[in-house]
Length: 115
Length: 115
Image (cartoon, rainbow over all chains, first blue to last red):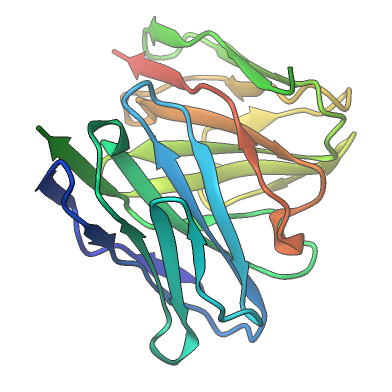
């Protein structure tokens, strides 16, 4: 069985602070994909990143960066110099490779960025 | 514009009154899914479809039906809604199953309240 744990239910930061959202996963599969999605207050789900289990390279995209560590089964997401527009619920998700068509989501972390 | 469209966005109904939430995608995607989002539980898959006339249960299929008569449409049917089906529903589509690492595109969500 697969499981994704986002232990941080809610985080509040002041604008320009850096913040890391944790994601820990469990799977028996040796190959899998991990995703991050953003859900802004308007409610839609926005794809942020995908990472496959063979690729442990960290990734940076502007103020966003992702740290994938297979040894600790973690795929953490850092926002540098946070902005009010980053306020949203962030979901980490996992799927095993193959014909699977199911994302197993974590419970989400609500990030509140204030001025 | 590539998109997944759900209707209605908001719905309040009474227990036992059959309803259908429509989902349509214009990207010629093969895979479509329905998820429900509940506080503290993240998103959970209800049903998915690998192609026309091919559907299968997800993690929480009880009380729901789906059909896939056309590639672009994947309606969610609640034959006899109950209050425990009050939730935020998302339709998603992807070119292939997410097990290939394909990004899933989500609709805007349908907030359903059953009284």
